[in-house]
Amino acid sequence: MTTGYMRHRCIECQQHIVGKSARGLCKRCWDYAKRHGTLIDYPLNTTPRAHFLADFELLVEEGYTLRQIAERLGMTYEAVDQAQYRARLAGATEHQARRAGWAQCRKAI
Image (cartoon, rainbow, N blue to C red; front, side):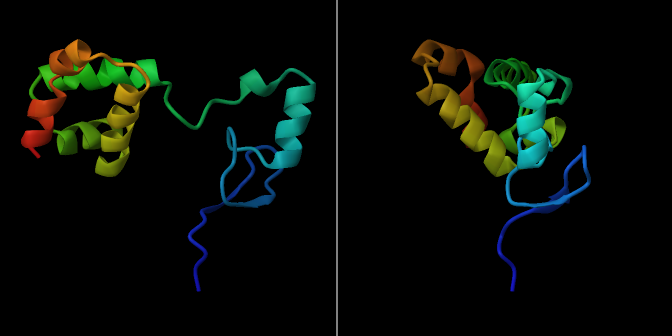
């Protein structure tokens, strides 16, 4: 029986992690890095929204579909769809949405 959680190892201590991990660290290593000010040395597991939107807009302008954008960015189709949806909810205006071509991109799936 699977639990639906990803299993991987902490990048610092190699302890097995079941479920989510921040910056690839287990809870103990994350707490240690936070206390000692070294958390910045570990890369984020996610892409900041502004970086995603910049890449997304560029690829839409070049005529890519959502599926092609997902492949190009190394994401799943569902992740790209959710990320652009969340970006809209977070404050992207309708003008920005039209400029990015989200409607045309979704139709071309």
